[in-house]
Length: 331
Ligand SMILES: *[C@@H]1O[C@H](CO)[C@@H](O)[C@H](O)[C@H]1NC(C)=O
Ligand SMILES: *[C@@H]1O[C@H](CO)[C@@H](O)[C@H](O)[C@H]1NC(C)=O
Ligand SMILES: *[C@@H]1O[C@H](CO)[C@@H](O)[C@H](O)[C@H]1NC(C)=O
Ligand SMILES: *[C@@H]1O[C@H](CO)[C@@H](O)[C@H](O)[C@H]1NC(C)=O
Ligand SMILES: *[C@@H]1O[C@H](CO)[C@@H](O)[C@H](O)[C@H]1NC(C)=O
Ligand SMILES: *[C@@H]1O[C@H](CO)[C@@H](O)[C@H](O)[C@H]1NC(C)=O
Image (cartoon, protein in one colour):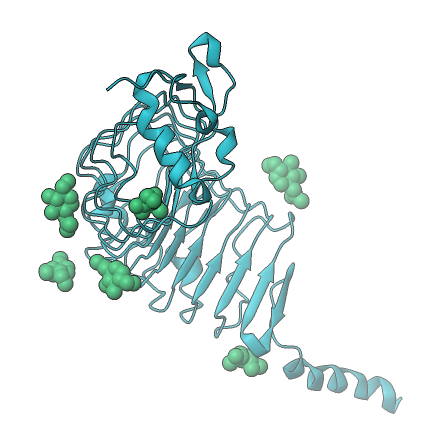
C-alpha cells in the first residue's frame, strides 16, 4: 500500500534531474550544446530547447522553414549549424533575437530566395550558404558594415558576381564562390574587399578577367581560378598580388601568357602555381613561359604536366623541355 502511494512522489522528485531536451535531440549541458538529427523532426524544436543553448546543430531533418520566433527562445546562441535539412524559406529579420551569433551554416538546403534583412542584426563572422539553389543575392541580406569575415556561396546557381553584397562586407577575408555559373566578373566588383586573403572562383564559366579586377586585393594569398574558360590573362592582372602564395589556373583554355605576367608573384610557395590542363601553344610566343618555368620550376606544381597542345610536331611535349630552336626563338 505504502509503495503505490510513494511512487508518484518518487517520479516527481526525479523531474528536476531530467533537464529539458527536445525529442530527437541530444543535449550536452556542460557546453550548452544541442544536436538534433532525425528525419522524424519536421518543425524546429524550439519549445523545449534549454534557454542557455550556445551551440545548436539541427541536421538531416525534414524541417522546411525557420523564423525569428523559432530562434527567440535561445538568445545566447553563438553557433547555429543547419546542415542538410529541407529548408526552403527563412523568416525576415531571422537573427533579430540572436545578439551573440557568430556562425550560421545552412549548407545543403533548398534555399532559392531569401527575405530582406535575413542575416542582419547578428554579429555574424561566418555565413555558409553552400549547396543551395540561390540565383541572385541581394544587398539587403546584410546590414551596413557587416562583421562577416567568411562567406561561402559555393555550389549555387549564381550567374553574376554578387558585388552588391560585398559592399556591405568589407571585412571578408575568405570568399568562396566555386561551382556556380559565373561568366564574368564585372570590373571593380572586388575593390571593397581589401582584406581578402582567399578567393575561390573554381569551376565556373569565367572566360575573361579585367586587368584591374584584383588591383585592390593586396592581401590575397590564395587565388583559385581553375576549371573555368579563361583563354587569356591580361598583362597587369597579378601586378599587386605580391603576397600571393598559391595560384590555381589549371584546366582553363590558356594557350599563352603575356611576357611579365608572373613577375610580380614574388611570394609563391613551392609548388604554389598550377598551370596543368591548359592547351599551351608552343610557338615563338611561349618564350616567356618557357624561360619562367625553367627558372622557377620549384614553384610549379608538377611542372612537366605543363605541355604543348600545338603545333602538331610538339603536341604532348613538356613546355620546359623545349629547346630554343624548337620554339623558334627569333629576336
Ligand atoms: C545550461 O543550463 C542547464 C540547466 O538549465 C545547466 O545544467 C547547464 O550547466 C547550463 N550550461 C551552461 C554551459 O551554462
Ligand atoms: C521526410 O519527408 C519526406 C518527403 O517529404 C517523406 O517522404 C518522409 O516520409 C519524411 N520522413 C519522416 C520520417 O517523416
Ligand atoms: C562603416 O564603417 C566605415 C569605416 O569605419 C565608416 O566610415 C562608415 O560611416 C560606416 N558606415 C555605416 C553605414 O555605418
Ligand atoms: C593585410 O595583411 C597584413 C598582414 O597580415 C595586415 O597587417 C594588414 O592589416 C592587412 N591589410 C588589410 C587591408 O587588411
Ligand atoms: C596596384 O596596381 C596599379 C597598377 O595596375 C597601381 O597603379 C596601384 O598603385 C597599385 N596599388 C597599390 C596599392 O599598390
Ligand atoms: C623566378 O626566377 C627569377 C630568376 O631566378 C627570380 O628573379 C624570380 O624571383 C623567381 N620568381 C619566383 C616567384 O620565385
